[in-house]
Length: 367
Image (tube, rainbow, N blue to C red; front, top):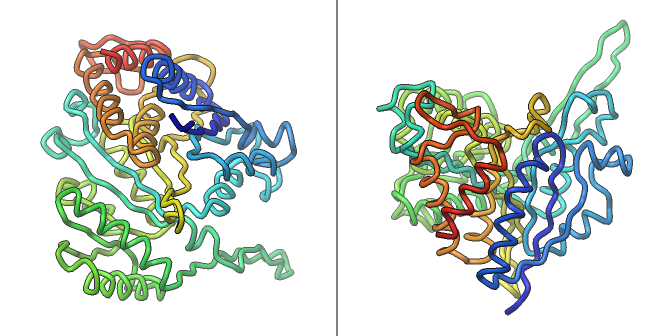
């Protein structure tokens, strides 16, 4: 069997604790299912800065480029608040996304039945929720130039970030959204700010043209991004697939995450274009939650988003669909049994540690 290479970047805060639970599952799959995973591990974020003075070293970047898939934990924390902007922990993740050309970020927001009461919204609003946000990841204001702070004199400065999108960037991300919609409810809502942003005007035009030319079988609607945020909170089940740019996707996906009750629950996948020869995509998988430094090292972090991110890895990088389905079903089974980490704890449930949650999910997966 061909080796499946995984490069692990646990990062900072609770990242290493969550990644440890995925390692257990990988070891089980290798031992019991001959999955053939080979793993290597590197540093990213604050831990990389402490070791190398960079948010990710060139050597670890090379390993990420060579791997079949990258599993990423989290980066950042107060310890590194004062480091230079260019080497801040988040710069490691941005470099991975840019150098690997991971233009498509997939962020599902799913409400597990057992957690319908954990959301801050009413149960009938989020019960059965299953939406997918497709976020453009390598363009827009996070990468646009110029990006600088100019000293104007007289104690005044000017901060500049540039929102830039080219036609091809919008075409390829909208195509991903339409293709994924075909496997779901066949509906796409495109969100931008065409009323005040020229990039939003172009975004709307290109998505509309791409739909007409190649995906007219899919239902397409448009919504201003601020209205989209409101509608996500008002009635999120009206959406199936949402496609949007880098900035709005960042904000809207965090809103969608909290609909389910906790950022600790939701995974994500960042994908590149298929290789012309092999058909393989470069890919990085990460939980939506951050490094949560306030609870790091206490063994109380929720590992579900990290484990669910590995399930997405099985599905999208290795076509191990049956295994991905089993792992996602195992998460639901454990929640149905009432096991909870502190962030999703509710009356009548059993509070468990990070490791206990990981062990329970592995046991359910192994059957």
